[in-house]
Image (cartoon, rainbow, N blue to C red):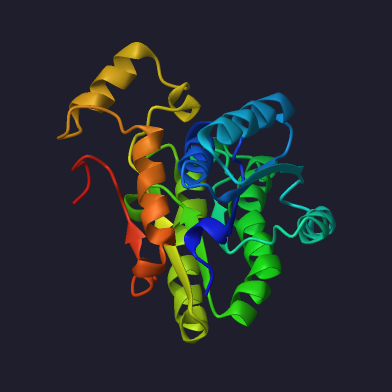
Length: 249
């Protein structure tokens, strides 16, 4: 089996926030890092440059609309041509939605479900055959605390992340005999742009509910994703792990 440093990791939505932190964490281990993005071209390039400075063996940026199987197949072909088919897939890309269910439109529903769930399904289906053939692979889905507990005014987002958690548990059982693990990381409130819909008073109130007394940091989430990718983590599969500062226990 390859050592971790010889492996390739693909992070969807890797241009910024938690995704960029995950890319940096793997880059610091001298790995091959693939940063997927849809429209954030400059942010992806900046993250790639940072990964190179941190010591990544190779860095590649790729663009694709996760809702399109055709675009993802072309992305896979580009990775195959570069010898960078992922041993580790981090399904991180996602969009949030805040609002009462009575105000959710069909377009809102389709956008969130297509990116958060369909995109994860397509990427996993396209990249897991190589992992099965190698009898080694790591699939790590970045979920949310709301996929576990649900949240008022975030029914649509909670639904998408709850589906991700169920997908994780079921696929873990399916792939376990092949040496491929499937886990989900379900963060609590993390200091990223996803909190930008809250004003300062709302952020302060939210922070006061967290026993740790603060929001999580993207680097903390990245460290957990990295741990789950290790060969030594082979017996951890089908788990939904929620780093949330004691907010939900």
